[in-house]
Image (cartoon, rainbow over all chains, first blue to last red):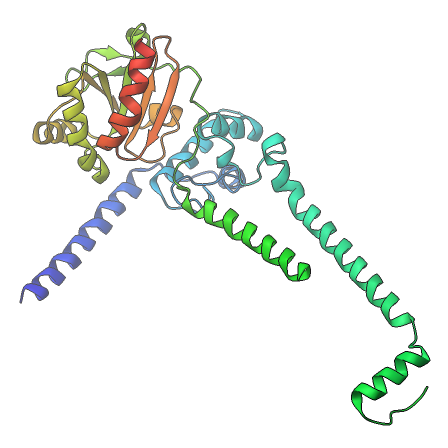
Length: 159
Length: 174
């Protein structure tokens, strides 16, 4: 019985939450200008939501992301450029807010690292192949053939 | 033998690197505001909306800004720690009531106690945005010149108060 009651309570709570969220949504200003909205999304797609850290501000439904989209919309409407808005966000949230981190001393490894690893891999492969080729080149001497035959205990073919 | 030692060493290095990465808290985003002057603002106080307060009036003293809201669950967990700190020390603790309703905030403080010298009403979250608030509760230590010296994201624990906040405040006051 207590289980049933808690289930009912949970369902009621969920209902209340959705209702509260629906009211929250309704309060926000309706989107009227599709051109402006497209620009808002373009800026928001370059920004990381700090609450859901693997989502962009454009994709996230977190309260903070909604606020930041509002802020972008307001600033674009005021005539600020996209670069201005990015700077505004970085001043408050740091480089972390950018999905494309800028190239500076602290991020050099991040940008160059994969290429360094690729080069190192290619170099290792090249050296390995060279070593193998050299090993295959030298034919066995008569004495080596003799020794191999003795070890294997079979007549074997001579080249 | 050396042939097998190298890959093993590289592997161990990689494990150590990834392990160190796992032990870090991804929620802790370093704030660019630490070491910079606190954003200027003036907001009505919770107790008396006719009275305005901002960092300008608090110049000359070390103070702590705590971002809170009545809807914030973690704030409830952190609140006794702040109440205790306010009772035991004379730290100037100012609240930033973030995206909240005045009535709800007053009821909440009435229920849980009020450790703040004053709380400021940031109803639309504009000041919070200037501070780069992304996870309530957040706590900032601001020095005599109005420069942010420390930011703590998430609930403050007694360990944080004793180990970080109070030593820093004493050092800044020193």
